[in-house]
Length: 441
Image (cartoon, rainbow, N blue to C red; front, top):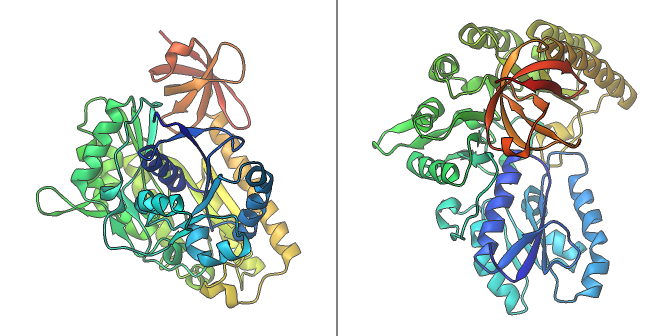
């Protein structure tokens, strides 16, 4: 991007928002904007928001308030809100924060160029529709620079599962899969720009069923196998998945597709069947455990990650113990856990909450178990040789950092020329959140 106007983008939440922010920056790049790292001196500020965390909207309003001095110093500064909070709040954002000029939902940011024209006429712009057209096909093409060795690629959006705690179906809409030929073309373009690892994204990525160039419908496994044929693309990952959509061919791909990395994020949310039913998850704890056994049968070294919610309405101590039992049985390399907080408009929001102190206690106990498992997994890596894709310099002079095939952060002493390279590394030390190693010849 070689524009004369400065664009500052702040991204909240998931990897899909990171991907969306990149696409919005490219769309605005075609309008003459160049992305900068600080809001000070920017001609436009764009907040790409997430509605998953507690009090997400209030945090956005608070952030907008911090920009008031910048607007006072520069009356021509444009301020926009994008993403899921924009979708949920709509006109309310402009009512509560009149200095906001633009509000755009996650399905309509391809319309940014026309919205910018409205701003140029002194008008405000709001678009939170769920259009039928493929936004990715309508994004204007900017001149794209070289980039780092890893990238995200959204292949599927929206969700039809309607878990009772989740706002995604309301802010992102129904499940939609992008055509396979467009995804393969975008993957090739990323490789041409220097990318060696692509993470395929979706709110429910393994529900992907896109139109194939052969006229048939492709599942995620077929898409992965075709992407694996791209020269220069060395690694493929995908996130986030639902247990009910882990089909046989996708399980098989973990065993026979060398470019598919041995890391899987597969949230279960709880270990109690009663709680799972209340969450509308449509699977049992036993079904989840049997699924993990099938996947590990084809990829024994799989690094498994998950998500858990504790203190869900109606959860008893016995229900929580079932979650601890599941975690013990499965053994996670990484897991993320959260205390339930109500999302307005979701079915669970109408139910009686678990005592806050009890939910806090359960969260602490679960996190202690998860931390123990994570530490054991990392300690077991010491002495092993892994393949590391180096991304950037580390915090210490002469240090480089990258990711192993298991998505562990790995530090080594080495030259900056390692960036973008894949090298064999012997792990020599396990740290709380990373591994240290030495380069092998």
